[in-house]
Every structure is written in C-alpha cells, then in structure tokens.
Length: 216
Image (cartoon, rainbow, N blue to C red):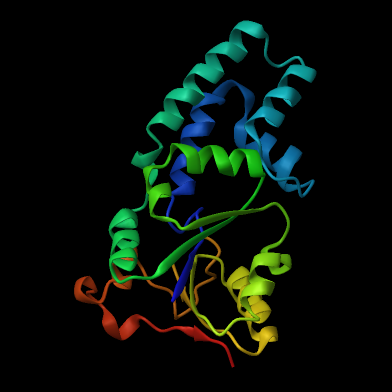
C-alpha cells in the first residue's frame, strides 16, 4: 500500500511554527503581512520573498536582515521540535508494516523543501513531491489513479483530501481512502482523528472514532 502524507498541520504543528516566525518578525507585523502579501494575493509564502518585500518597503535594513536570517536558521535547526506528537512513530509504524511512504506537500517549493530538509522524518519517505499548484492537479496522483495500488491519504484538509480522492477515482483502478487529522481545515468532520497515535491500531485509544472516507 502507498501511504500519502501531507506535511503542514498533519505532521508538522504549523500553527505553533508560524507563531515562532511571528516572534522573529515581531517588528514587522508578520500575521498582517502574511494576509496582505500572500494569502490575499493567493501567493504561497516564502521567507525570501517576504524579506524582499520588507527591504523594498524600507522596513528592514542590512543589519536587521542579518539578525532575522540568523534567527530563522536557529529555528530551522530545531524544526523537529515542531512535529506533532507521534509523527515519527506513525511514519515508523507504516514503514515497518512494509508500506511505501509518500510526502506530498503544497506551498512554495523552496520554502517547503527547506522545511523537509531540516526535518529528520524526511528519511522515512520513499518519495517527496512538492506541489506549488492545487493538489487536485497533481500529475503524480493522476498517474497513480491508473494503477491498481491501494492508497491511504493522511491529511488535515477535508476539501483537499476529497479532491485527491477524486483524482484517484477517475483512474477507475486505484483503491483509495482518507484518514483525516484534526486541524484548522478539517472543518469539524466527524471522521477526523484527534491525534496521530490513532493511526496505529495497537496504540489507538478511540478505535470507534476512526472512520475513513472511501472512494465510491
């Protein structure tokens, strides 16, 4: 079986990570800028792009930029501290079961690749795919849908997960299901799991709550 993981809010505590970024950019109103320059413009966040914007607006000078980059480097070097509980245990569990692990992460490729580079869990994945556009356009998923593989998608985003299932469904051969991790984009779905440990049957405390979304 191929097990496809999302990164942000699924394996990585992205909310806490963003809070730390906001501390580093505390003098620049990080969250307001994030909404203004990235979210509102439908542009994927990239810290290099953000630094470029801050320079252009005269909000930082050379000395301040060096300090910010130094703090960013420190943050990235301890990125494992921002993994969700049991993230590594879950990956090791699926690997030990003989499954192929795939990471598909959405966002600015350079920024996402930087995160993956600093995370020790990268070693568990047989393949890492960076999607800068919507995952519903993923060429990898389209090709996978033409196989007779069994696929498990582990994601926090219900809309995205359903779109990924639809791609697989179009192939008419692939069998897929989703396990939805509780997060800001799970939208209160009853099928969501509260923590990653529930993906490991022998450690699950609430087996009755672990429902799946299936291809129909």
